[in-house]
Length: 248
Ligand code: SAM
Image (tube, rainbow, N blue to C red; front, side, top):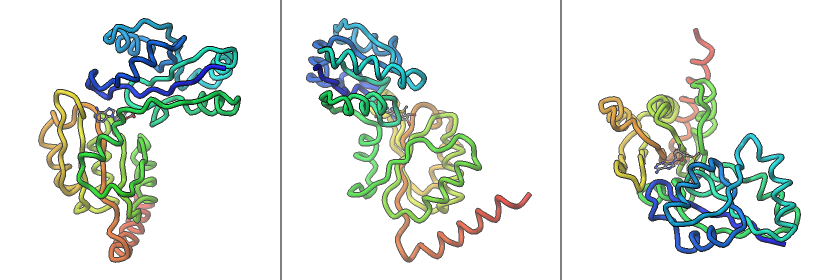
């Protein structure tokens, strides 16, 4: 049987594709990609020409079985996503699970991920952290999720888009308290890379006053709750937020 190579790709800077990723992408029978046009550009940039197979949220369940059959018959495939590491807030989980269940070797070619890149420059405690990915799009559901995280003592890591960055920081300040320390890491490895730190209130003011700081892709990292001393404050805030949701 063949192998499924799970290959990380750049999160902005095209030179971050590792030599082993290039060699792997060159040697496989086909590359499974979230957006075949985008991945074709990346491959072309590195002079690689391989057949591409679309594998995204909407077809992954059906496509997985066919792809596993191809690997069982001896083909080796690579899995890439649009940016960073597949399966990290990206498709691939179903394919990897199906391949493993079928006894196919699944091997990583590790590399960039915005999560780890953000954590590595934030200057927040990084020995333990919680990756929350994207928060819900609607404010009520988002606040509900944040409430469940208000007492978490580990560093919290979120992904956010330019559409919602301000609203999400606002909800974080409301639920965690505006004085909680946080870091907004924007456009990592790209031209406008910016890493801002401060309290949630300070970061909100910074973004509100500068439209450029609301553009691009974001990792938001929030200091964990300060343990027992904070517990009563957090509980008070949690109750207040619950009450607020029931008021007109
Ligand atoms: N699989 C990717 C990874 O390993 O980082 C994440 C894919 S997820 C669909 C895209 C989100 O990742 C963006 O909305 C943003 O929150 C974050 N992201 C991706 N590239 C980034 C960058 N260069 N700087 C900051 N955040 C980034």
